[in-house]
Amino acid sequence: MREWLNGSLITRQFDDTARTVTRTLAREDERDEELTSTFSYSAAGELRQVQLPDGAELTLAHDAAGREASRSGGEFLQQREYDVMGRLTRDMSGQQQERRIAEVRLNLAEYIHSSSQVKATSHSPTP
View 1 (cartoon, rainbow, N blue to C red):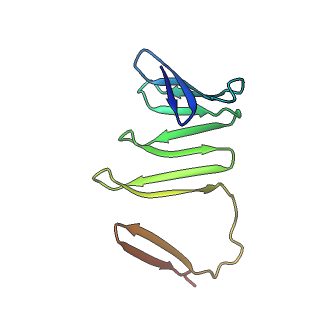
View 2 (cartoon, rainbow, N blue to C red):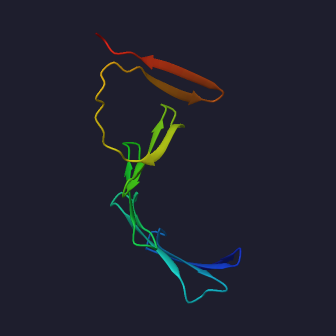
């Protein structure tokens, strides 16, 4: 399938179940420089991996209900959490970092946003 969007030609190739397997973007003025992404799926049909035009890969994981729970690639990590009704309640992203907290006497705060309310929880160390 081919479509024009904002001066760019987008070409998609699909598998037998109508899932996108490749998407190529070519700007009208730079047709010799195409950007192609490749998509891989699990046997259950869940998107598992995306290879970006620069060669970087994103790996996706899903929860038991089939919802996207995380995507990661290189040092990037995005995690999602849902409530019992299946609504997205938390979407966190940033760089993956592995650290150990050297100082034991730290106060940690957690902020959870839900609609128009913010719940703040303070975690203090036990002596």
